[in-house]
Length: 172
Image 1 (spheres, rainbow, N blue to C red):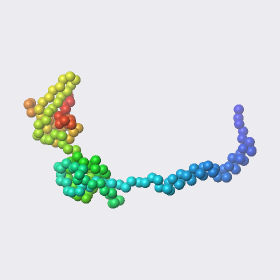
Image 2: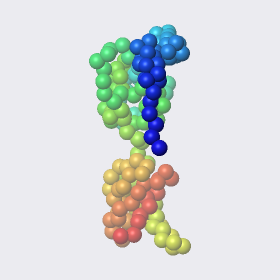
Image 3: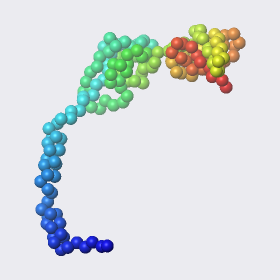
């Protein structure tokens, strides 16, 4: 079964097209434009973290030595710290000058184990757990994969540094 448009329906559709948008559509468009113009959405000003005093390499940064300031230089780009929480508790790898922004690349996590200092090596395989004394061959933070020399046998093994300062070794 086919449907055919009548001449009357065609003329009313053409008249509606010439008349323009409906009043309801105009009201909605006007409301949306007023929301955009009123400025209800404000962009937050960018912030940066600066030290209040010079901090030297190897020092742990505490929140009392930091200040959050508004960025006034529009050409400042890069990976700089925007909140005190990003910086506090980290260790500096280069000198941080007072009043200058702190770049995240100049910070690192504190070392959980230090080269040459005694650590506990742990190997676990199901119910079997073996521990031994060891000496790390490098500095490492929690989660880093490092090489450790077993102090009893002299064998060098690789393992992951854990939060408690132990090194967990996996089977080859």
